[in-house]
Structure formats: structure tokens, C-alpha cells
Length: 259
Image (tube, rainbow, N blue to C red):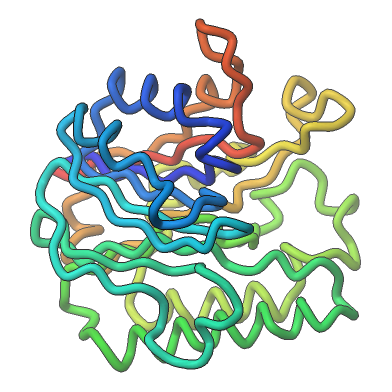
């Protein structure tokens, strides 16, 4: 089973590229973030034509998360089901092929002195609480998406360039660590302990071609799923223009294959 996650940075702008990639790579489950669509604008028919059931949580402005599945999609749940949802459409859960899959878009944080940064930490803490309230670490749980956190210095092109910035600060990494400590594994790290492989590059200054990126898109798996993982890859090719000339997202796809 192939599980993938992709911050598409506007599905309205990126749909041909996403469909092209999905048809060529046939993931069983594809989590998407930053769709920037309202629910009634989500192109469910286009995904259905490729054999996918889908669910979406979005308000048509910013944020927006989706799940597309070829192995069934049951019991979709939007957000945390509490007042935290007023901060945007940032989480969607569904049961796909026996897994409880979550597509998450963690707040960016903007700067360390911003109220958005404080909200980011609060949101991460709420995610940790949600997991503890709804699941046992022995359940088949996947949390996939754009975490806007580089877990380690090996996940940024130059740690010195990020001193005093979000995405690498100790409180953010500690909050991510607490989520992992609940019972999840950053599965990509097991297959690529050396680091230096990225999932996001700024559009500006030729950052992609220069290799100036970060790994901030993660697939976190509970033990029953992590034990089945046979590979984990980041598809750098999907960050390039498609053969049809479609402009890519600033993120690319992370794929974990389960046996």
C-alpha cells in the first residue's frame, strides 16, 4: 500500500499536475494540504475518474485539507470537533484501508514573536491531546502533511541560515517530539538517516535548483503501520514543471510504501 502526502499550494492552480502525478504513481491514499478551495469546489469527480473516493475540509480562502483513497474512505471527521476549528481548515481524518489517516496543515508561525507562532504551538499541543483522546498507540494511525517544522538540523540546507526563525525553533521541535512520543514514527527518517533530502524549496532565488530546502512534510505512523513500511521517498521530480508545462507547488510529494 502506497501512502502519499503533498502540500499542493492551491489545488485550483495545481489540479492537472496533481492528477497527472496520481495517475502515473497510483498512490493508494493521497493526503493534500493547502487546497485553498471550498468544499463545494473540490474536484471530487476528477479524482473519482481515477478511482478515488475523496473528502475535503476547506472554506475557499486559505488552508484546506483533503484525502483521496483507492482503498475506501469511511467516517470522515473535520478538524478537532471543538472551538479550535475556528482557526482554519487544518485537519481531516478518514478511515482508508483499515488505517485512520489524518491530513494536517500545521500553522506556519510566521515569526517567533508573533501571535501566530503561539497559536502554532497551541495547535500542535491540541493535536497531541486529540491523539491521546481518540486512539491507542497500538491502533493503525497515520498523521501526514505539512508540519511546517524541520525535525532536525539535518532537515535544512544550512542550520545557520535559520537561527532565530520558525520551523527550527526548540519549542516547535519539542512539540513535534511530544506528538512522536505519543506513539508515532517519522518513518522517512528511518530510511534516510543521513538527512539533506528536502520536501520544500522557496520559489525565489533559484532555491530548488541550488538545493536550498527543508524537510517539513512528514508521514508519521503508529507502530502497527511503521512496522509494515518497506520504503520512504521524496519525489523531487514532482517539484519540477510537468511535461505539460504545469507550474509546481513549492512542496513536493512524500511517499511511504507499506508491505
